[in-house]
Amino acid sequence: MVDERTDIRTSFVGILGYAGASAALVGLSIAIGTSASTIERVTADVASAVVLVAAGAWVVGGHHEAHERMRSILWFAAVAIWAGAAVELFTQGPEAIVLHGKWLVVVTALLAAMLALPLWVLVPRSLQLLAVVASVQIGSAAAVYPEGSVFGVSVPQLRWPAIATIVVGLATLASGGFGFARPKRTAMVLGSIAIIGGTLFVDVDVLRQAPSDLSLWLALAASVAVLLVGDFVADRAISGIGIAGLAGAVAEIVHRTVVDRSTAVALVALGTVALVSCVILARAFSHAAPTRPPEPPV
Image (tube, rainbow, N blue to C red):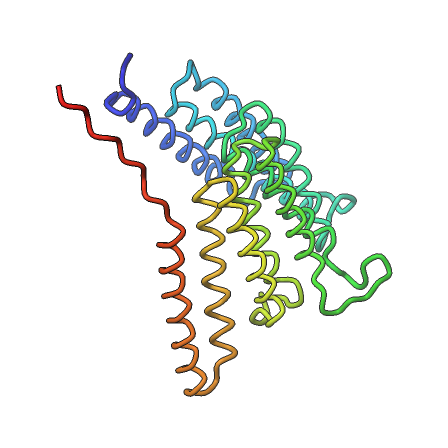
């Protein structure tokens, strides 16, 4: 068996494929030009997506990781181009199908999911799962974006897209944890990021102003929960996301809360005591690895 790490032919095949696909796509956009009609541009995008899907399907001739990785990348690019074609059609197409505002995002995300989902079912790799989750995440958040009231209920400070983001994140995390979504780690990572990130939007639009105190405390609670889940399933990636969120939320909460020097000094002392206690407890709860008994003399 040939070791993939030392097979230089694999690297050259990959370079040829990536460079060729990139050059062809850019060349096509230049060849069409800005004077082309909307139908022509959409047709070219759809044809490009079809070619990328077909190329990805044919590039895999056996179980070769580098080739499977290329298929994954080509299919992810196909979903992106497919979504771009939808945006082009619904913004520049005939007046009867022109969409505006959140419905443009919702329909585009739905069409992207319609291509991304079967590709992920066929090949459950990380990029394919990312395309599915991103489509569902964006579409769900846009669908509940309040253009006026939501279900007749006006809640000015509650950002419904944040709630949708958290719900989809929880579903993704749980699906990965129970093995319904593959790859398991990718699903749990995407879900963890969505849960923590969604809490920052709960009562404020972070695109216009900084997260509120409530958002930070919710992010802290979400980070602790993600950390516990990561430790429970023994996955360092999930735990790392929880740790990063925990540290960031605590730092920002302290930065906003502590306004005078005396409180800051007290906080330094308290933090030091907590750290020392952590070290002592960690040593106390650690169990030394059992040592093998000495070999009996011959």
